[in-house]
Image (cartoon, rainbow, N blue to C red; front, side, top):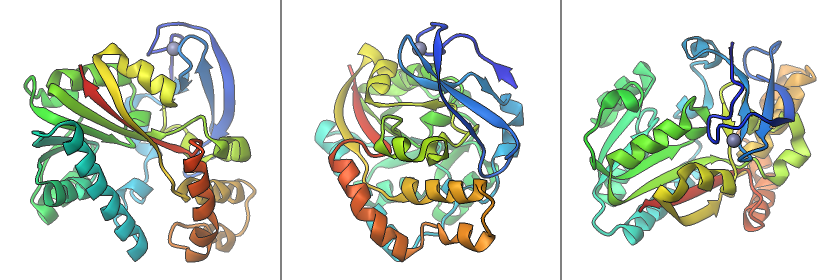
Length: 301
Ligand SMILES: [Zn+2]
């Protein structure tokens, strides 16, 4: 384990405890504590696995690596991607080159290439996923982390981080690198859990996006704004309306209470009955700006 005694975002060293939780997927005997920095408000793990040991906390069926979606989810995702392509063009008319950091097997890249006519490049840690995306869709996916790629200054007009920033060990350094590789008026598009959600008040330590220890930092609108600093102007903020966090947080509860596997397995994202119940609730939370996922578009100044 690696211990931090200073906030990696603002440098201060006073914290308050937010939640004692654990990995409901894998290492269930290990407890992880999330703290809030009293300086900048960011929520983080002060004790986290060393980067070299991270592999044991990611299973190959880890959900973001999965390509199995039901028909409705597929429809919803392609509708959303088209909308995002239009949003990028709205703020940066000439935008052409898109980089997806943590692109998995490149589904989003492929859709952005098809719908938005962007020229797309991806970066992905997993060798298995980057190989798959290259072979299946013929995409330019570079294996490794962003810093290793040494892209030239101003290489991209859009950089996308979808459910990536909460996994990073050095988000500040990554934001600085993104600033460097973005063209003038370039866009950064970030999707991440929203720690200031009503979902967390209900589910507490079972709230899915704690995802200990895979999620090292958890943000809200203010801390994202602070992280991006004066180098970027916020252009658009959306609170996503998806029932995923709700369904899988309930699953965490049943896993922890050692309910039979049949009960645990009932709580999955292809269950139309649960989607029917929780989608309207998720919709309401989104409208009230208190859903569990936030999406921010910011522009290089
Ligand atoms: Zn701080």
